[in-house]
Length: 159
Image (cartoon, rainbow, N blue to C red; front, side):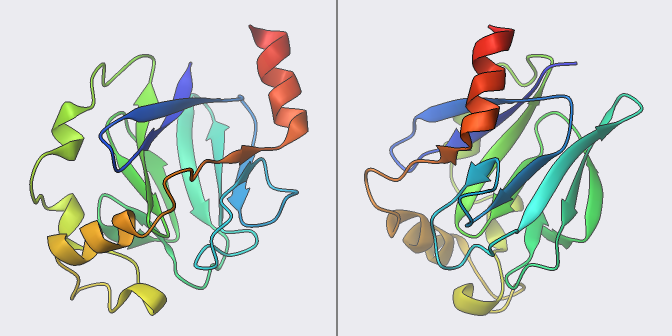
């Protein structure tokens, strides 16, 4: 099974990150496999893992929660096309090449985009599309994800 996190950038482009078949940690700390250097992201925010042919995400008691398709989750199974939100950063879950394209994820308001994280982003039920857009627009133009060197080495070895 090939699983990718596809970063949705505010300029309408995407960047794909293949996941190993083990546990992948996401957070603000440099020690995380995926480092999101944003104050609204917890040091160890969430983790993605595979178990018995399925992919799961688990929130690690983060301050601003982890959201899947606009809903706050503690732990949930991931499906192809799901939108995972960590702070203001959104990823589409791609499993075995599905979905193939991502244009529909950038189109107008949707059920997924109507909700956002709590804390620094307002109450989860109260956020609307324009608030979500403002959050995404506040990311620096050069925002990128730091990938832990151990994970980079694994990508290099698998290629």
